[in-house]
Image 1 (tube, one colour):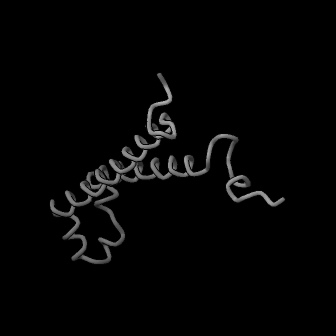
Image 2 (spheres, rainbow, N blue to C red):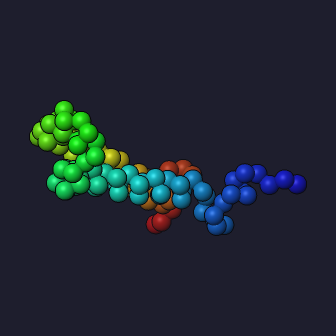
Image 3 (cartoon, rainbow, N blue to C red):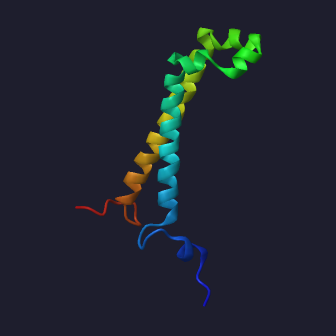
Length: 103
């Protein structure tokens, strides 16, 4: 008998691959979000190859509006990761009826 794809790909018995995948995606969102929040204050932001090639882009990147936009995008991305982790943690403690499995 040929095993189903979920049986053949599972990382460990009892841990579905969708849980691990969601955990990695949440970690990626949190990491990327924090990077975007911190990026406008680094030297990496000031010494950018694309900003050196296109002067209009360098002028735009140094504006406060652009920096706030990047920070807001990073904050939303990080919060999406936190919400996904919260959803993972709370879904592990719920039974099939939607009630907590712990007394």
